[in-house]
Image: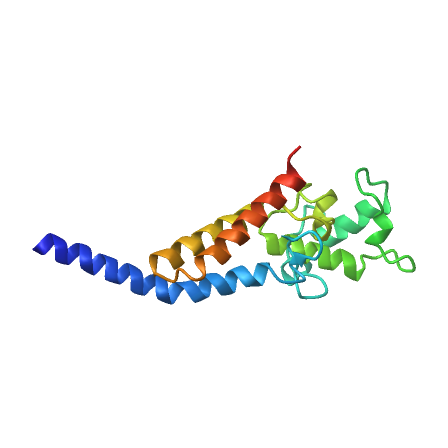
Length: 180
């Protein structure tokens, strides 16, 4: 019948699309679950940018009404008393009193996260490298579950339990670390 043919075609299309998509999902997953994104010993992931130096979009733009970019404002704030930051000198070069490589790395990492400058990951997000965010790890847990379902749908049942185990381990770690 026509209905059966349409449903069968949709299933074949879905299966073909999933077969093509699965390697991309797994590549995306592994990007986030190997060091330096994966924090050894914690078994959770974090944001981590691989480039160095100031972000060009900041150095060349984002000027305030006084003509200062984000880095200039950040440096000025770090030079004065900064509440909430455990060690402002971790982000300033002691000889020049300018932002150091760690400050730029932290800023670029915050930008990799997709979040705007805020206090989400400490003052000006500068502590982002020290945080395994629940949001990222929850998305990875969901991806582990989704990959297990896709593999089950594609009858790749030998690997379904691997992905289910990963999801269970991440859920247990999330519960242990983020809930009391």
